[in-house]
Image (cartoon, rainbow, N blue to C red):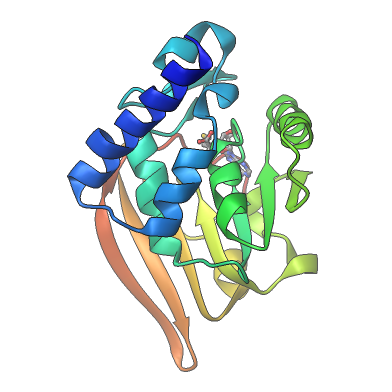
Length: 211
Ligand code: SAH
């Protein structure tokens, strides 16, 4: 696929998978137009990079479906001032989408090979606002807390307490919780406590690690 056809495939993805499903968040659409999703999938799957489904990225993990990336990014309600924590770097695609919108993105990946592969790709693509750590996301990243927004892209059985503790007041946490099928939850920290709502059913790989 040539460069123009990739631009075309990306625009078609945005029109048919994102806008057609009712998502019109301009900052998210702009980020999806900018980030070259085919750079984040294995070479042999580049022709499928803009398809309406997740794809394998090695080590038993997957790059999320474009619509889920768009939906979860939109739910975070971030802007150019936001400091964001992401758990589950994986391919790095979601991270790059976040980095197009936010000020700083801190991302944690438990599989060393995926963490170093993503870090190398971010450097190659010129991102200076992405910070990668290899480790267990259950503990969050206390040195850089609190965060305006936290996104988790692997599913725990329960919300890790460290993550709610690291939310700024007014901040949001978007996280799939459950076993085979999960509820996509949005938590908002108010002055007085935490509000929680259930958005939709999703399917993510399990969050590993923990105690
Ligand atoms: N947003 C990524 C999704 C990758 S799949 C993408 O679109 O490419 C989820 C990722 O979470 C996997 O790479 C998996 O290794 C990672 N993961 C699972 N448990 C984790 C944990 N406890 N801490 C950090 N990363 C974890």
